[in-house]
Image (cartoon, rainbow, N blue to C red; front, side, top):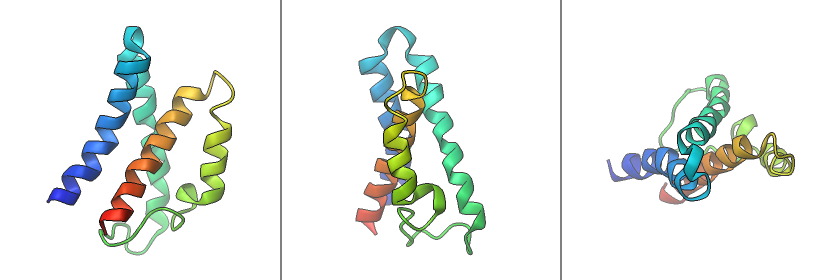
Length: 102
């Protein structure tokens, strides 16, 4: 239960903290954009089983691969994709912490 709380607390709390600290005037909009990065979890649908609490997502699923992470870092450069990229990387950090808890 602690692992679950930490995992989802980071998934929702880290983007919220970033939005409140760095985008105070538009925090809700930026928070929702960052949460939209959950779309990368669609790659879980191609795994068997779809969910395994003892599996590290990092470099297992295609959208959680090191190559994909490199693309997410590059997405930080254009201003138009920066907030979404921050959401993607916050998602990866959250999943990375989860890997440490396995």
